[in-house]
Image (cartoon, rainbow, N blue to C red; front, side, top):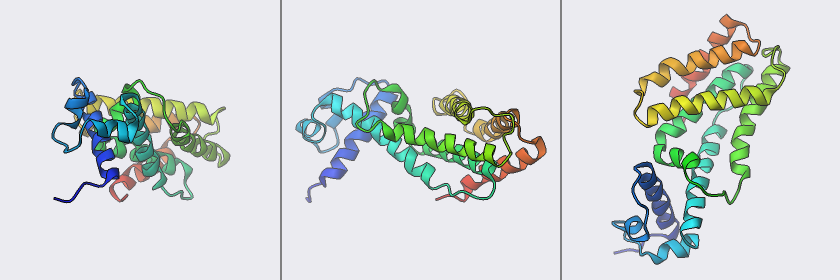
Length: 207
């Protein structure tokens, strides 16, 4: 039987740890490697121990989020692009629910804190671009708009991932929340609705 590549073993352990934490299962060395074909020593080989494993789990979550946001290409409509970033954020969470929860659930420092900061920075830059284009005339601080967008999106996404709300709730409420937020920042309501609709529907065409 061919040996599993080290990178694959590392990823299997990261994803299994995230799933166990999401299910609130005790994450012991033996429980972690059970059924993976890896030995308990693999945790030390790849992560230096359990603290390193949890850092890697959170890091993987933010790495995947950054990669998904990077797939959103800017257009001439900055509000549409912000909505598309919101849709990409949701897509990433739904595709990686256990990792997504662990990003905010696990108590561990990141090896690369800039990975988390970069994802937020994409939203700040998007809000700043909308203000520069005259769409967010009442927004004094793009960071405030990005913070409100992230907080609202995270809250709604977590309600869906944890089963409190059905997945359809995201499709109904997320565009409405974004529209209300952007109109509050100064955008014209009718124009904003069109932009948000275009950006949100882009999730159906994204990779």
